[in-house]
Image 1 (cartoon, rainbow, N blue to C red):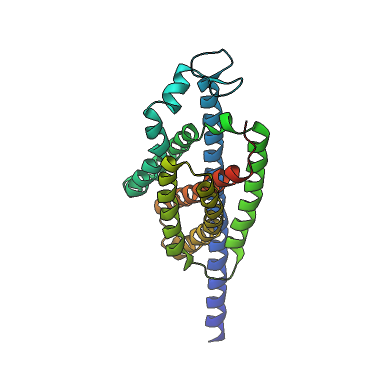
Image 2 (cartoon, rainbow, N blue to C red; image 1 turned 180 degrees about the vertical axis):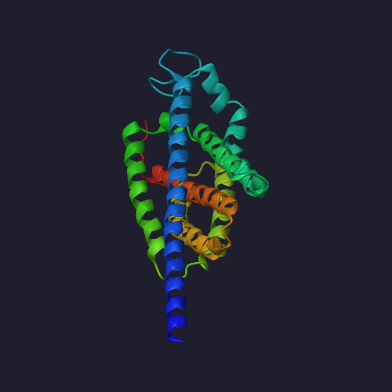
Length: 257
């Protein structure tokens, strides 16, 4: 009897070690995919902003020493700006709805395409905020994100109950942001930015714990294709948390040109 108990404990210990090792690999893939997406976004935003502005005076002046090129005017001042503005949101909904029909490799490519689209959508920040403040806020966001994600991964507290409340908060932010496009209220923008930072800070911890728990719940099935797509969806969620927290902090802390 004692031998059976010993064998059972040993088997359970080996299985637990395998899950821990697999979880570390899974989280590394999540953070690695997210990091590549962030790099693609940064490069796309920087490249597009360079194409959109010029030091040569034209009819499209936007500052004392800044002028939009024809491409920049089309991108930021024509009706196309609405497409550029809402394209990432449409992309996310479409990607989430279709990922089950994709292979893991295809899903990863689509995620990188989304990251490039997001870069185009936020490229305007290089014309509104100083480069120094963009880098500064990015570092602040990175430090905050790392701390929040680490807490979400290591905490023993179950924060799964935050999910529905945070999703309602995100929907409220989207509605308020769309309304403020027409109102252009600085006070409303400040309030949206403050609430947005808090919501996406909480979502960072929530999503990290959810990625961890989802892996542990499904690791026993050994479906590597499903786990691969789960890692990409996890990367997408954390990517969105980081980007939104960064954009809201930039509105609060960024120095404008």
